[in-house]
Amino acid sequence: MTKFDEWQESKRRAEADAHAAAAAHDVQATLTDLGLGMWLVTVAGVNRGTITQITVGEETRYAARLRHFNPGQGVQIGEYWELDKAVEAILAEAPKLPGRDPFEQLTNYATREQMRERTERARLRRRAGRYG
Image 1 (cartoon, rainbow, N blue to C red):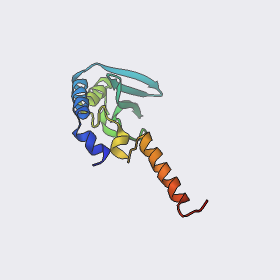
Image 2 (image 1 turned 45 degrees about the vertical axis):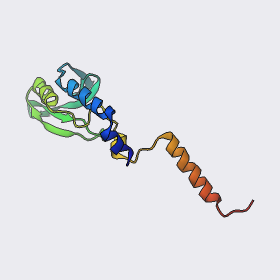
Image 3 (image 1 turned 180 degrees about the vertical axis):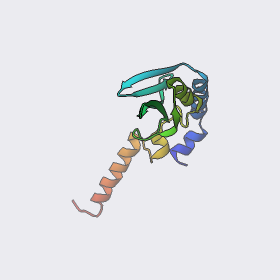
Image 4 (image 1 turned 30 degrees about the horizontal axis):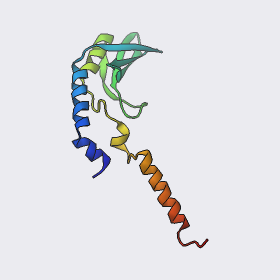
């Protein structure tokens, strides 16, 4: 059983899901102006998504994106004529992986002790068969 499988069945995951559900119903969002027509939407200190101002001709629209593991990417929700509507759209979407460690889910994550053991095994393998 991998570390992720253990975490999936653990009590910690149930607590994280309960905390995420409570944060999803908490409508107190913080809108941070990042400059250059970008805003960051956070709920309870957790990044929920970004809003980008788009100007086409004489019209101004706001593109809403949910956060993604890759910071340069994002899941686009849509374009809105008002900033408030874009914020509401981000808040209406439930977070995909709230309060969880993405490294435990996407990679073969190892603790420091496991990495030390791997390093020691590799060192012993390199020295195997040598005399002296």
